[in-house]
Image (cartoon, rainbow, N blue to C red):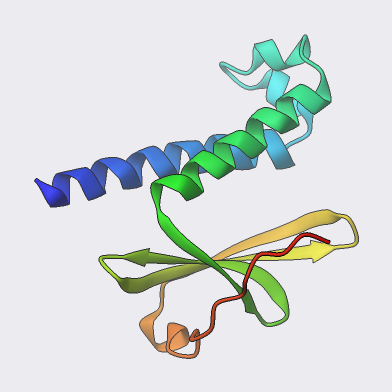
Length: 121
């Protein structure tokens, strides 16, 4: 039963992550052209981006995560059953997210040992 819950949470997180990334990074005009995305044509950019951010937060809430830094960039370390499963690194150029990288290679993850505390600026 525990495995089924992990699989369900993982699939839900994947759906939320996909929707969140699309609503946050894909231009609204392109979203409106996609099947099922026609509603974004009538919605404001801020509303669509806010929904995307909420979906990203929902995906993170479904998985056990911790904030860390990889190669000087912010990253989320994902843990399953208390073990490090992967790292989602976020490349930021200026004020824009310019890349998302997910690493699951166990050999590359051996160097991820620290957790960074969240702070307000």
